[in-house]
Image (cartoon, rainbow, N blue to C red):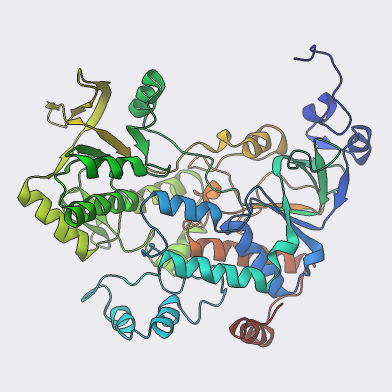
Length: 511
C-alpha cells in the first residue's frame, strides 16, 4: 500500500480533483487523464440508456454525437439476468402491457399483434379484447421483448456508440457541461482513467443493488451461508434442484410479482416431478380483501396478496393522476405515492388454482407476521421466529428461505449517486431518491448550458410515478428528447417526420 502522501500516478484521479466540486480543463490535463469530447453521453447501458438513445436516434441525432458507457454487452443483459433468476425465462411472460415497447416509441404494432402474427394464434387478440374480465391481462413473453430490442439496437447502430467501462463519477465543468470519469477495462489503455467532456449527460444505472431483509442479511453474514438463504434476484437454482432429490420446506418472504413467480415455480415443479415440497409464505402485510382509502381508489386483494394488473394505475401514464402528480411537491407528493403504492402482483388464474390446491392439500401455508430473527436448528435447517399481530410467535422450520422483497437499496450505495449528492448539487426527493424536474433534469446539478438528466428507478418519487417500467422509461426519454430539442441539440419531432420514421422502423430501415 502506498504511503499517505504519495502523488497519484499520471492518468488517475488526484486529491485536487477528488476534493473539487467543479473542475477546469487545466485540472484534468494536469492529472494526465486522456479527455474525449462527446456532446451527449448516457451512463448505464441498460434499458434506460437504450430507450433514450433510441429516441434521440429517431429524432435525428447521429451516432457520432452520442456515446453510452457500460460494463455490459447488450441493453437487455442485466434485465434478462434478473428475470431469469426470478423465474421468468424467455418463454414466460413479464408484467408489461402489450403497447409498452422499449424498441418502438410509437407502441404500434403492439406485442400482442406481433406475437399473434408470428405464432399464428388469434387467441391472443381475444385475450386482449376480453382482459381482465374474461381473461388475464395479456403480457408479452420475455423472449419477444429481448429479440425486439436486439433488432432495434442493430437498426440504430447501438454498438457503434458503446464504450466499455465503469463510470466512477460525474463532476461539473467550469464554463459549462460535465466531466464523466471512466475506468476502462484493465489493459485496454495506457492510463487507469479516461474522461469524457460533454454538454449533456444522462444517468440510467438501474437499481443500486440488492437489499436483503435485515434478519436475513444478519443470518447470511453470521453463518456465511449464501446457499440456503437467497434473494430471488440472485442465482438460486440449487433450491429447486435440491427439492427434486428429497422432500423439503421452503419459506417465501414477500408479496409482489417475484414472490408469485417463485411460488408458481415451486408449484409447477411439484406437479411436474411429483414432489412433496412444503411451502410457508410469510406476508408482513396480509391483505384479506379489497383495500384502499376510498371507493375511487381501491385495489383488489385476498389471501395475503394485493392485486393490480400493472405496476401503477393506468391514469399514471396519461390521465388525471399523471396531471395531478406533476403539480405536487414535498409531503403532498409523498402522501400520493403512499396512497397508490404498496407491493402488488397481477391476478393470474393459473397460480390462483395452484394456491387453492396447495391450501386444501395442506402443503401451502400463508401466514402474517414480522420475522424477529432466523436461527439454525440443531439439524442444520433454518428456524424463522415469526411474530403475528396478535402476539403469537410461530417457528416454521425450512431447508431454504427465498427473499422476494425486491431491489430497494439506497441510492447512496451507488458510487455515482453518492458522489452527486456530496459534490454535484443533487439532493433527495420526498421518497429518498434523486429529485428531478418534470423533464428529468437532476435538480441542483445545472452547469452552464449543460444538463444532467436521470431516469429509471433512481428517480422514483418525482413528478412522474411510473419511472421503473418500460413505458416509464419511454416517457422519460421523450421528455428528455423534447427538452434537448428546446435547447437546440436536436430538431423537434413533428407528425410528418414521426410518420416517416415509423415506416423506417416497420421496414427495419437503418436510421
